Length: 314
Image 1 (spheres, helix red, strand yellow):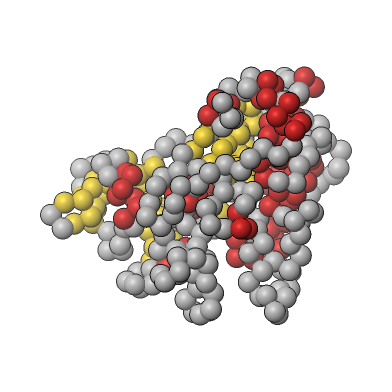
Image 2 (spheres, helix red, strand yellow):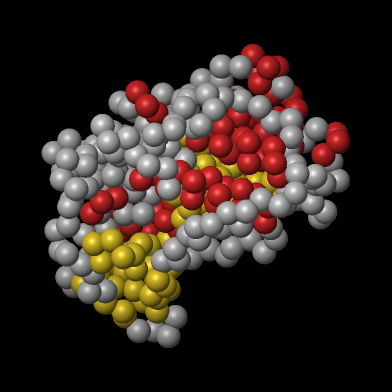
């Protein structure tokens, strides 16, 4: 499928995402006081590091991939294990746009969150400096609620009062909330990756405000947010007409623009939903209301997208 033409010249960037250390794949099991992975060769691989209870709640007796992260569990001191479903990766260049539903009880999450997956690398932007990052898809979706990925044990929220033991509360997004996804094939994914990587690097190199060192100094709701950074990168990669300020509004606008007649033959678009995997650390999420009346008027077009029934109001 051809890439859409562009004329802006090359985009340079730095900052490669780390790749979690792969350990083993197999069936997640538990019994006789042991937690293990039943490998394809029939061996029971017992992990020396603790396996988060949330994984057993959803994937016991299912095939998983096990990765080791450099971060350590605050209780055991051991490195943190990351488990993810053992599923095949797409073989064609693609982007997945992720509208993350609202977190209950958080004013900053009133409109949800937007992230983007480009060929298996996820870019996420936030007012919180630590959450501006490029990461593997497994990390974005399935980080365990352990160590610095968890919330503070007393308040269950973000807390960096102790710099030696921060609680960033950024465990796997599928455990935190449901995700509406839009897959688009046909855009220039190499160009998009370079632009997003440039944004991550620029944010990470921005000197912090000494009064709010954990916040991104140049964050702005209108022109320097999770939504506007992704919007501008997509414009640069070929979707020049996309617009929107709020996460769900931009998500729906991108769906509409990507299916316009002048994009047919260039782009393939489908939608799907990643349901929230319930764990005690997080209540049920909910979608933000559709605020833009134009997006409501465009529902007939949006309902023509394969899989749209999973993400659009009935």
